[in-house]
Image 1 (cartoon, rainbow, N blue to C red):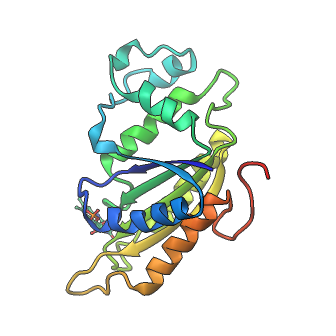
Image 2 (tube, rainbow, N blue to C red):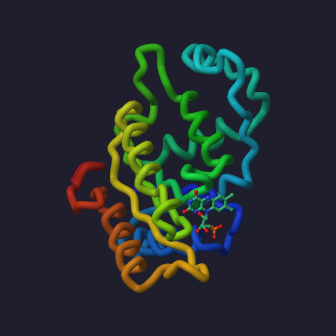
Length: 199
Ligand SMILES: Cc1cc2nc3c(=O)[nH]c(=O)nc-3n(C[C@H](O)[C@H](O)[C@H](O)COP(=O)(O)O)c2cc1C
């Protein structure tokens, strides 16, 4: 199984990368080939006026020489796209959102997407405060995004950061992350159902 793992945290040794690494290491241990990048290392042009219309006709001149063609190639060569992001104001980080906005680049005139058939999975971290923890909201948003793009939603896991008033992550989070990584390596969703790739 080929997994393209994209971290959307500016903190390279922070909560999100630490948690995401448990998933990635378990996936590798179970035979997956994982390519890892941090989205902050890439130049991604914001969408522009009439972008959706331009994208349908593959007109990307206004993007200049940004890194989206490279990122698209990496996505196209993977079976599973794994997004790893902290929750910033109830959403993914801004840079990660700009990247996802540009997935419109993959949509064709019949509204199919070149990402169709691939798996989509999510790892997110948050404050641990119930009122602010919107990982479930982001999971639903990405599930809906997967449906629109004809991708297969593999599920999302989340963990909390350690603060004065929150518990932080514990052994249980690590077990869930490692289990998810092993499942992704087998093309399984969070429930253990084989949904990506052949035998
Ligand atoms: C700009 C910003 C916005 C945040 N918004 C939220 C939020 O809406 N809900 C929440 O639970 N945590 C929020 N947090 C907390 C982070 O999601 C959390 O601390 C995360 O684990 C940080 O990951 P990192 O160590 O990779 O930076 C926010 C943090 C920042 C910096």
